[in-house]
Image (cartoon, rainbow, N blue to C red; front, side, top):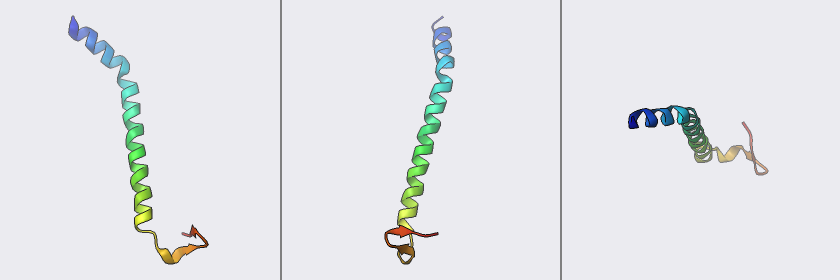
Length: 53
């Protein structure tokens, strides 16, 4: 009986937990992309405080 209740609760919240975890992973990936851009930005491309591609 306890497993049925826990299973139902898990199933009800699975979508929200999965979406939250996906958002967390997206935020982490965005942070790594920004850090990568900062680390490997070419200083000779900076023009008046802006970077050009």
